Every structure is written in structure tokens, then in C-alpha cells.
Image 1 (cartoon, rainbow, N blue to C red):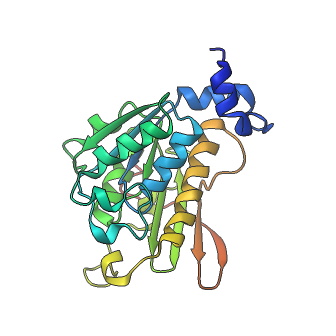
Image 2 (image 1 turned 90 degrees about the vertical axis):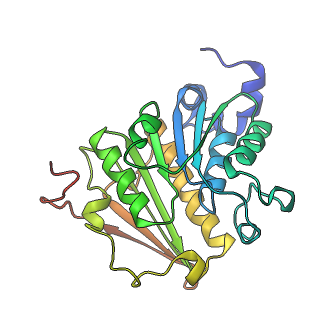
Image 3 (image 1 turned 180 degrees about the horizontal axis):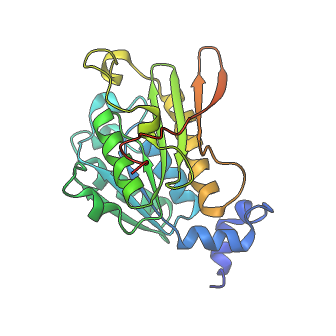
Length: 249
């Protein structure tokens, strides 16, 4: 398609980048990305992807907005407390960019619905906050050859990796099973700041765009960790587990 004058103006700061250009912007407008969890990570990831011009943007969440969300979940305001996150997020994302299509899924992903939900999307961005959901999303993406961008944050630390089935280790190569109960604190218990969630979400957004555009060096086979207190980043190789129950099958 030929970009309209409005699109050329809207995305001009991206189009001027040699790595994107008009062809790259068209790729973004034809892409389909789903963000699972529109909390501290997902609210900002979906915001950046909407602004970038992702053609079809899916969002998944089953929670309502709560007061303690407002320190980090940028799409929600005090007036939104008690309302469904996906409904509020969809309305605001469409106001940010009325030219894209936002599809909301008010549910919690499980083994009975995940394949139907993710089947039409090119990239899945995991912004969930628990191991059960992360393993579920990983296994579904590996089985259906869906590119996955994982992110997590806790306290002043965060991590991001990109998983391309057939080309990289998967999340179960990194964590083969859920840690014993009580050994890993939740965000509610350990706390989290909006700034740290924002940094991790920004990296996830950049990864999704790079993967769509096939530019740069995505975090395929690598885990990027971030420590805000030390203001340090570290990349570590993720070894592929030859006995991985998900990707070695």
C-alpha cells in the first residue's frame, strides 16, 4: 500500500530512520501483536506499539483497575478505578491512534483458550507477573511457532529475552519448572517502581519492533538483566536444553 499524507506525517520520525523508512512503516501497519497482561509492563508496551503504528494490537487481561496500580500502570487514572483494564486500555489506545485496530480479550489465558487467542498474531509479548502464565505462553508459542518477547520486573530489577521457536532456546530452557512456593516474592510482596517497569517495557517494545522489521540484534538466545540500583545491564547466553520439555520435542 502507499502511505497516505496523514500516515507520512504521523510516523515521520520513524520513517526518517534508515532502518525503517516507508517500507518498514508499512510492515508495522500490517503487523499483528498481542500483549498479554496490561499492567506495569503491558500498559506501556501497548502504548508504545500503538504509537508506532502496529496495525492490529491485541490486549489480554482479566483484572480491574485498582488504586495500587496507579504508581506504574500508565494507561489508568484515578477515575478508572474499579473498571475493566482491557476496556479502559482499548479506549485510550484508540484515542492515541485511531488508525489501528485494538482487540481486547477480557479473560485469563489458560490451556483451553490460549491457542485460539494467539493464533492470528505475529508476535506475543508476555507482560504477565507469574510463572504459571509464563510457562503456558511459552509452551503455546513454541508449539505454534510464534515469536515471543518475555519481560519481567521485581523490585529494582528486570529481565527481557526474545524467543523464536526453532532458532533459540525457550523460557523452559531458562527455567525448567516453577520455583518452589515461597522462594520468589510477588510484586505485591517485594514491591516495584514505575520507572523500572517502564525501562523493561521500553526494551520489550523495542524488541517487538526489531523482530517485525528484522533489524538490529534482538535478544534471541540471550537474557538481558537490569539492576536499577547499580544502573547496570548484563547480557547472558541462554543455553539450549537438549531435554527441554517444550522446545526439544
